[in-house]
Image (cartoon, rainbow over all chains, first blue to last red; front, side, top):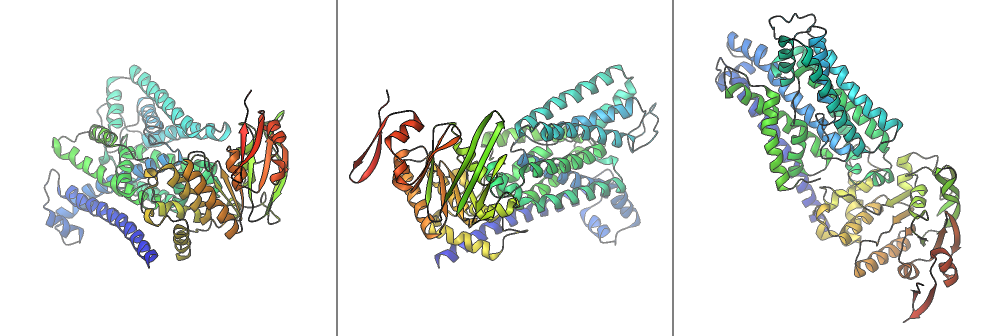
Amino acid sequence: MHSTLKAQSYQGYIRQKKLVILIIMALTIIMALIAISSGSSGLPLNEVMLTLLGKGTENAARIVWNIRMPRIVTAVTAGAGLAVVGCVMQGILRNPLASSSTLGVSQGAAFGASIAIIYFGAGVQGQIFDGVTIINPYMISICAFLSSMSAAAVILALSRFKKISPEAMILCGVALSFLFSGGTTLMQYFADDVKVAAVVFWTFGDLGRTSWREASIIAAVVSISLAYFSYNSWNYNVLQGGQHTAKGLGVNVDGLRVVGMIICSLSASIIVSFVGIINFIGLIAPHLVRRLVGSDYRYLLPASAGMGAFLLLLSDTAARLAAAPVILPIGAITSFFGAPMFLYLLFRGLPR
Amino acid sequence: MIQADSLRFYYHPDRPILDEISFRTQEGCVAAVLGNNGAGKSTLLSCLNRIIHPQNGAVYVDNRDIMGMKGREVAKHIAYVAQQSETSRFTVFDAILMGRKPYIKFSPVQEDYDIVQNIIRQMGLKGMALRYIDELSGGELQKVMLARALAQQPKVLLLDEPTSNLDLKNQHEMLRIIRNIALTEKISVIIVIHDLNLALRYCDKFLLLKDSSIFAHGGREVMTPRNIKEVFGIPVAIQKVNEVSIVVPYPQ
């Protein structure tokens, strides 16, 4: 009798977590609708709803489907992706500091983008700069991707061949971040003003660069990695008890780490190479939801994804509205609001 | 039943951590691994369930070689509780449920929940099933870790210093639980333990490690003052107080 009572309350506890996830998802959807309706040509919410249901005016449909939606989808998928990557990295490296921006992936992307802009004369997608000729709109993304993957490759090679510890992997990422930042600065020092401006502009991050095509690439990558991570959520759970415990429970810890890091780096690299540097989402979203749903990756992963999507949407909408018609750089917004929020979490005590 | 057959492990070939380790223990038996710091006790435990791979030798559980098994299969036969448990934000229930990891395909089934439920009842953890393990005391946490190991339904249980962080009452309670489990679940238990008095009181077999090898191995009869002096490098007397054997050291 008593035992079934307990079972019910455990189920109740699980239901609470599911409820938290549902609330986060609902908030994200509401935020998305607000984001669609706000902008230079104002669209009231009811018109947005009608348009989404295919009953709006042609003009509204054009704005919603061609301009606003790619941006919203990018924000949702990129935010979810960065958050999930941070969440998994924190788990497999057993370090609350791990995220794509603390492991050199973002700085690597910036370095690659600088090479593309300064030496290959690539422009920024969707943006035309005076004096910067666009050779290939994908050039920056490809260079950024290759460069950020090289950061991941060095870290992985070290962990594979030198068997370095998770702590050393983080330190290695920090060192690589400095290396890439130094390289970027040197390149900028010798480049002409317009190109430097283009590099700086790229590194600010911009969700408006993406069209449906890029948004769907990000969506596909994030979905695949989220599926892989969810499949492994029990492995990540067990790893939270320490690597000896995990090995004792039959988990191939080294393999789990390496494959996890490869998938994390791949998705983070693809995201930043399309939208530029967006810091803090990968760090703060998982830590925020850890307080709400605990360390259980079965619930932590979807909750982090939802929270990441919500936060990036919120930041992007704030960036668009705060000084309209000027759109503030999204990377700066996430850092500017993310850092104090993170400090607040630290003061409240960070659950591990 | 677990049997180790000439295990050898080293980080550097000239300096083996374990050399020619062979022994066997029966089900229902609690065996103590004893020796000085650095004698290779924890390493031995980790080699037995392949957390680290010995360079030589074999380990058999019920006559099946575990070196050829998949990690998941090993975990169904042998459970292991580390000396230090890292905690995070999991409830006691979830932490014990993790013991079902080797059996879980994608998500736990009713049987897994039932097994966890039973163990919680058996170990008297009912009142704290929904507490977070990062808020438990050392004694409570150690019990939860033991419960998790039992959820693996193992034939062999390896415990690395299960009493090292516990107070007097909890030390005895823990070892009493371990003894009972060994008998009722027909598990062979191997514990690394520093406290010779606790070992004498709760264990039936003793494995004395010295300089990477087995110095002596057997029942109560190997725990002589002479053997203990040889292994630990300190003269001792063994005396009985109210029918309880205690080791009295005489440091020089």
